[in-house]
Image (cartoon, rainbow over all chains, first blue to last red; front, top):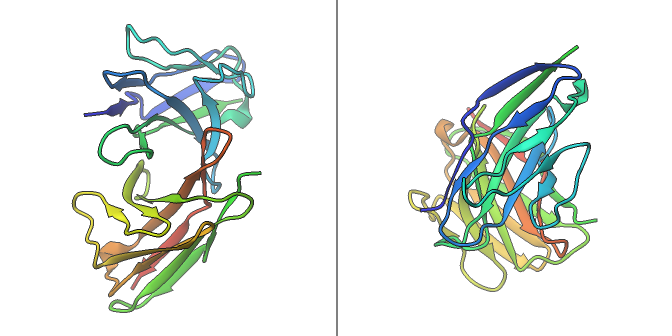
Length: 111
Length: 114
């Protein structure tokens, strides 16, 4: 079954420090992976998708098929990056087309 | 672009009553919409897939008679929680794919059943 694992429930760093939010997936085919961010009291917003290979707000994520990972990175964290981050995998199974979410990682950036 | 709205944003109801939640795609059409449920400090769990012009498909363990879904048009899906009970209290979120190749999410509806 397809699954997304985000091992860290909470990640706390100081402003200016590098950040890496881990995401591992299980899927035997070619995955479509996304990172969504949810700021306090706001809706989920798309941050990145691996297909576009873009950098948003300084964040990047590279798909590593060998390690089945899609870790989110930023070289210098900012206080405004504090939020919940969800890694998501497009479902090609029974509920086709929906997204399967990891449990999320709460990023806290301290001044 | 690709905005999804939900109404109401929060609702409080008495146990045993029914509550309807609307999900609209404002600037794009969506033949399929997804309804998720999010418990406090937890991730999103898919409840059902809403299909325009056909029956919704429900995830295992989700009672279709309790959570009625109607996809009335290419821009509107409704979720009706029938005979609501306190355990139905949760945050309900809808979403839809848009042409940009990603999924857009509504702001969510917080349901509190007393």
